[in-house]
Each structure stands twice: as C-alpha cells, then as structure tokens.
Length: 230
Image (cartoon, rainbow, N blue to C red; front, side, top):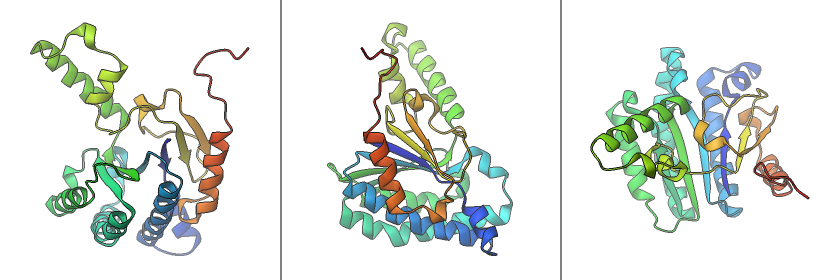
C-alpha cells in the first residue's frame, strides 16, 4: 500500500496548550517517528508526508526559521532509527530556499538510508506544490519532445509519473488530520483514485492506534475504479 498524510494541526495544538508554534512542530515530529514505525510494521510500501508546502512560505519568518532548525535536528536524531528499521528516506519538492545546511543534511540522510530493498519508503514533501509539480513535468516533457528524446505518442500516465518530483505513482490512501476537508495542493496527479480519510484529530494528538484504524478502514473498502459491481 502507498499511503500519504497531510499532517495538519501543529499550530492549533500549540495554541490550545498555550505554547509557541515551534513547540507544536516539535511535538509533530515526535508523532512522525511513531507513525513511521507503525507504517514499517504494517508493511506499507511507502508513506509520503506533507511537511512543508509552497504556500507555507507565506508564514512568519520566525516560524520558518524554527522549521528550518527543526528539520536539521530531526534528521540528526531520526536517521539512526530509520537505518535500524531499514527505512529509505527521500525528500521531494523545491527546498533550495531552506539553504545549504538543510540541503546538506537532506543529502546525507538520503545517502545513509539508501537501502536497495527497504522495509518502507518514507517520502517527505518539502517546499512542494502539486500544481507546480504538474507544470514543471509538462515543461520537461515538451522539451524532451522538442529534442526528440520522446514522441507525443509515447506520453502516457506511466510516462508522466516519471517526470513528476514525487517518487510514487498511484496513491492508495490519503489521511488528513486537523479537521479540514481539502487536499491543499498535495500530490494532485497521484490522487485520481485515492481513498481519502479526514480526521478531526490534530496532528500532535494523532496516535498509532488511529493510524492503524485508518489502514483497517481502507482494507475494508471496495475500490471500483469507475467500474460497476454486478
């Protein structure tokens, strides 16, 4: 199964508990660690997490600086656990604006977890937007057609996936925490037949038990892909 999570609610959780927003993000990282462990135990093929969108750049500079520091500290603390669990870590999106220190930490983490046959592929969307991903993929395809590396007849869903930044194809299950019922520009091309589950639980309060319930609910869902069941 390929699952994804829009991890929403860190800021509201912090406000509810009279904490600063950085404390909310720190608590959110603790939850990520537990959910990744559960995903590996459940033998998911991949888990993709929406950590920072292109729209998030409009947030206060102080919050973004806190997120930048948290990315580095989270990588430093979590990579040894990912290695022990044989989880392959991959970041996707445009995270160049976070600076060389973040980029260096990401590259080192990806090298350290580059398992050929991982128990779980953990994909982190950072500086990612689904519309931009589709637009940039379209430009690359048009360029390759112009350079005769690709013909128009060869363009298909399978080919298009190869040009997208997200390292997955079809997505089976999307979970969004925090109570909002929208997909917020995440993995737009991948969501065509995805089962979507919304929960009012704020991300810092999301538990392994609730995650497993989401997986169980998905396993009991009949996926028809537009066909009629007779």
